[in-house]
Image (cartoon, rainbow, N blue to C red; front, side):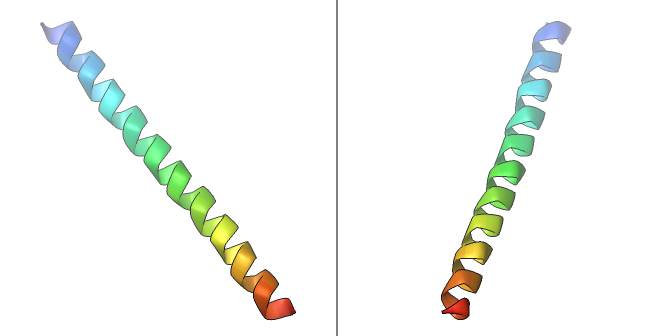
Length: 40
């Protein structure tokens, strides 16, 4: 049972990491898009 709980915690941590990376990527892409529009 303890092993299953540890696996669930690791999955949750991995999900949080993926989510933060995705948000960072979106922020960078959107920021570049906006600055590109301003450059025109």
